[in-house]
Length: 335
Image (cartoon, rainbow, N blue to C red):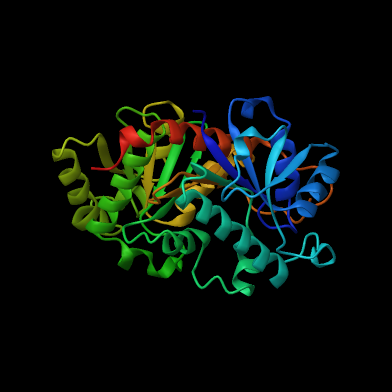
């Protein structure tokens, strides 16, 4: 059976509804079963913004055979009033809508009604106003799915992947947070995720923290005391991993096709590289969850929201990665 992808519009105030409308018109999704989840009026607003019309068929995906819908199946919800949608603004109403739609998608994937979730961009400010109770949506989803293991956002662009040893913490706390255990978790997570994305033996580099890789200890000892021993231990277990490599050159090796992935030490170390190489094509994979969940790496783009200018490239890539991961999921589960 073709993959069954749950597609949700993200924050109603951003470009998400428009992106969904544009994606539904893309021939690249024709061989996939798509279930829309969210408010009908929000999705219709996105169609108006994109200048595209789709036939949406209301169903109850908790028990209806949504695969037989003559058009796009919509698990219709009532999470936000039409008048409460404020384009290009963070609001508590949009945050509550975002979380309610996400909750429904998570319920459906846990019930086996869909295989994966693709979400258009969320707005963290709106979600925090609505009381998300976590630093980000990944840790919120991990709690909802009762995940107790290691989770981390992974980013990918045109076949280049990154994971993070630390993520949403102050830069001043990064060095103290880098441990052998965290490096090992981040590396194993990206290895298992790439296998689920179709890579037979991912080639992974671990980035250094300090300038020039620490310059033999002159600019810091994290490479000598923590990073290199962790990499060596993983290599001895037959993982295709090397490092630490200086972070100002490691991405050159990735762009030349010598590596598939980089384990970075902190958030911007990888994000700057990927967003510079292709801001409108990057994808975030929610690593460590029991099902594939992907989203565009860019945000809600309030500067162009509602103007019909949204680029479908990143959400198309997110959709394609989710579909590939569904295909490879059961045969490439972590040991």
